[in-house]
Amino acid sequence: MAELIEIKDTEERVILVGVNASDGEDTEGSLDELEELVKTAGGTAVGRLIQNREKIHPGT
Image (cartoon, rainbow, N blue to C red; front, side, top):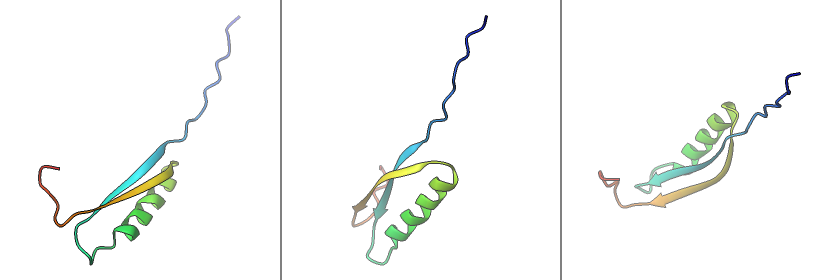
């Protein structure tokens, strides 16, 4: 007799990362919107990180 194997759906967990390159940017609002997209895709945002930079470095 065949053995039944239970397949569990795994929930993706993500950390949201943003770069704030100027005082006028709404980085927090952008991450809020990104979090909504993650929820729509069935994931969960478990954290967020914003790095403040004077300008975006092309190498990174």
